[in-house]
Length: 271
Image (cartoon, rainbow, N blue to C red; front, top):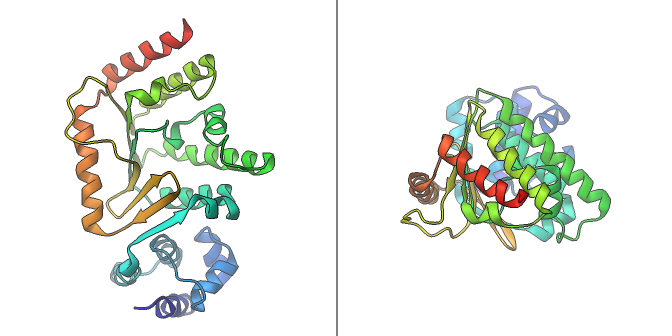
């Protein structure tokens, strides 16, 4: 199915459901103009776009599966960070928030920084300090990322974070702020639906930490590389990330052991 045919099919489903475009776009967390471009074949929808529109329409599972598979015709997509910055990183945060709202189990592997859902405001600002954002755009982005963190308190969802030990020792912010960030990890690890694993430097490992990534259930993976964000919903690709996640999970310290490791690193910053 071509992008134009897919857009037409989505429009026909919306009309059959007797739903206004404005209501669907609002539920799908996208602008009415973007939905219009998709429906009229002027913009090829991503897999994420299709999933969000179908969720807003409340279509049956067989229809949803068929159209999602059609969107997977171009299953791997790369979007340059400069394009996301141009559109507004706060809007991208809202896009991710919409995906998280439809996810029952989120698994995140990070070898470069603290995962976004666990970052303090000071850490968010430091991560974005070289992103060429205006002060206004930066504040909007920080606010949007902090709003995303509310999902952690939804106990109907499960969160699994894996972080390599060097991330905890990397001084992006002043030492006292770093200590506060590490306390934030310890506090989050006590939530009943959140598991945080730290992969210690001495632990034997069967995989290389080649990239950071997030898995949304078993349907979607978002990979971060320096110049772009890559999205894939191809099952064979997703399986590679599942295997990588499990390999590091086996080497990770969790629970009390994890908290002891994080607190010892925090105390180093406080000395």
